[in-house]
Image (tube, rainbow, N blue to C red; front, side, top):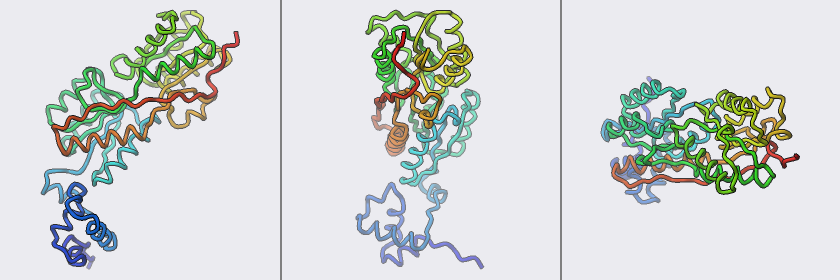
Length: 341
């Protein structure tokens, strides 16, 4: 017959304590109620006995599933895996399992995913899919599920979020190009219905105005999505205007890659003819041809901070957890060069 797995009473007997003490130690939320010395002793015994806590059984008593849903818009975008990995690490230490889903930039898919996650009674949600005016998030709030946003936020910032200081980041890119001698700078932006699309565009216009450069509407194109194809089409449109420019600021690295494609189609070299900057410093950006000058965002810190915010909200729904704005840092590589003409 198969041997039964060790239980809490067996651990309690070996530790010489009541089983309720073991239960407190094995639950990350109540572990602090027991002395550190005793907790370490009980955890060592549990590990020696190969004990594994059953979150489903615990959830029947506490009305918690110990699962958290994470929704990203595009898992093929290399920005998101390090963010999600950090979320998982933080939540795992507190006994939670992360359920990762991909909306594929589809609002219908996102609604289906969120309905499915709610049916599984997730204890909280981390969303990287927010729009500025997002009715889906409004629906989630009605269900009283704790929510934290990452990488994007809503217009009124009423939901706790972890984002980067996008206005500051784009300003760094513009200043870098100005120091290289560029004065005619194009801009390829992202969707205007996202905070990243809005704020990075505003950052570009503010920097251009501050340095008394003319913001030529023909040199500005907003892509409908943060994808390579959308970036290629946006820069094609700018090139078709026949307006002269020597550099382009792209609102993210995927759009910048699309700019590479459009320049190659037009027999223009980067950075010999046109310098290009990106945003996010996604993994392998240093392996592009040429390596991409971009704004580095702290991917893992974003994920870890989002997870910590969610933990606080799951423990206390009324907690005043606000938004965090993390500063990006300029990383100069081979896609930008001094103006040679």
